Image (cartoon, rainbow, N blue to C red; front, side, top):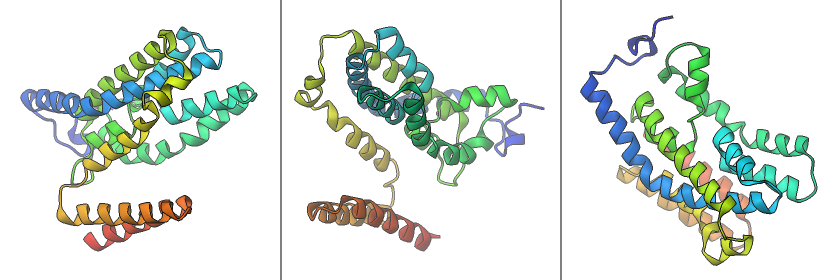
Length: 235
């Protein structure tokens, strides 16, 4: 199997273009990395409270690299569940990456082993940074942003696992607000046109209204429906 970019649907780029893409991906990841670093601190603190030592918590972040599934697994253990239940909870939350993986597969290169390694850097943030307006993905931006994000997550976990913070400090310092911030940053990447901004504001207004009347699950469904309708109308 050849390793050319053209075979994967994108012509091979000159060295200067690739270098610019590496820099662009890393720079785009910085705001996310700041938030992910703080999120990693929260995970490190909670993992330590669940009985993980610093090496175990940091290794988990380095190998799994998905905050939601890691928090779910640790929560299962804290509440008395076994390792099998914790692994199942994390796996179910990670099923969304099957869809994301299929979408980004044409951008990856090499054989199965190489693509498997590169795909470990696919999380919501790197996936969004690597996406192009035409629906394709830039492999270099994926890898450069993914590495920066991975370092932020792992170092944050390490600091939380060895630092002086306790579980109560997560609320005291507002670290629990990091997850909404990450979703806002993800959304901000896709607000480049008036139509998209209108769709986002409409969905947000509906979500806030429905949440205020105590139906947050419906708020999520309505927001998603608005996004789907606006996307269909834009085609």
